[in-house]
Length: 120
Image (cartoon, rainbow, N blue to C red; front, side):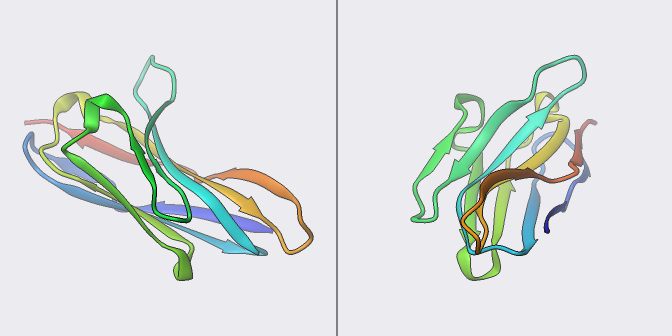
């Protein structure tokens, strides 16, 4: 059994910052990619950023230079530092972890989501 839990969302004014955290726990041997996705009302879920176990990162064009993804492999945790936030960043942010169990089963596990609201 695996759990993925996000935290750190909230409300902030334009130009502000937030830091999201996502921790995976349970029967985990290793985690390949970990990523952050977001879904705004009436829109499809989109990739924000992801990071491999080796530290290679990938960002959506809309967040490059403003958001930074990082991870702590020992803690099975991924972070998203969001700076210079804009109203269009408002969305529910979801974490995804590409998990390998001790029995060799591989699957993607989603968190429940955390709301980020950017408004004056």
